[in-house]
Amino acid sequence: MKRTSDSSSQRPKKKPSHRPIHITVGAVNPPASHLNNEKRKFGTSSYGNYTSYYTTRHPQGDATIDYRIDLLDASIFNGKSVLDLGCNSGNITIALAQKYKPSFIKGIDIDENLIRKANTNLRIAYSLRDPNMKELKHIDLALQSHYFPKCLSNMYGLLQMAVPPTFERTEFPWTVEFETVDWTENPYNPNEQQYDTILALSLTKWIQLHGGDKGIKSFFKKVFDSLSRDGSFVVEPQELKYTRAKNLNLDVDNFKFLPEHYNDFLMNKLGFKKCLDLGAPKGSSTSIFMYTK
Ligand SMILES: C[S@@+](CC[C@H](N)C(=O)[O-])C[C@H]1O[C@@H](n2cnc3c(N)ncnc32)[C@H](O)[C@@H]1O
Image: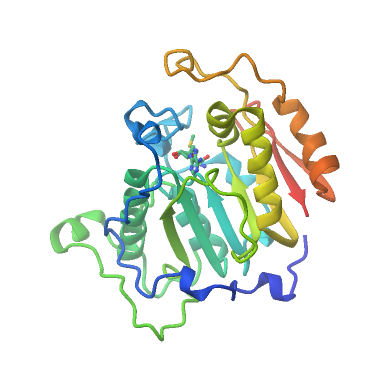
């Protein structure tokens, strides 16, 4: 895929106020006050908001690897504006930011504790990396560094990340931002910025469990509207299985719109131009798809 030079691949210019002047990483994000009490029951992990996700999800327990990333082409990130939906503790968002240098990457998650963790992770990655490093060689989801050992930041603390308002944010870590948002809560607002690439990894099940068939369709529609022209949507459609669904009163049996129907909806109802099956990552049977608007 070729890197484009049209305006859509620049850092989004609309609504600059959307981005705070300072990123004081590690600080508590304002709570998403709009989340109702039901949605505050995060202790149940019923949104897939697992706390140690990146140290436990890999079958071999190797937190440094995520084979899904190997399937993704650098060209959908490099110099692009990227939105990582359901970013959890931000490990993938941060790794992509370091390796592929998007012009801007935003990770959002419904769980404010995870976003707090993501902000801390960003500050850890920044504190441990070689300040002269031009490019990250390997994606390391554990955010380890071979330059400064972790004991240094344990002894001396993490680097501050607040930047002067005039600072041009073209370099990691200032290209990264995290926000607590329930992305299903509002439809797309045409005044909001659009992104060149949107990721929805291991997210569809949680959206559909809580929003039903209508919810997942609205989710896809919002993704489509939030993408700029020729933008890419990377999605990992999950099976609608969840052993604890009944206890949590989540409806799994009445779904009519199943993962095998997603493609038809995305292509024929929403109007994506192209779909590429990127295959299943090592250790998984679930394919990842890339749709082009
Ligand atoms: C299973 S994790 C997947 C994390 C990451 N995308 C990955 O695949 O490595 C799903 C994440 O989506 C978040 N999530 C679920 N529903 C959401 C919503 N409506 N809006 C934003 N985030 C949501 C959860 O809190 C959780 O962190």
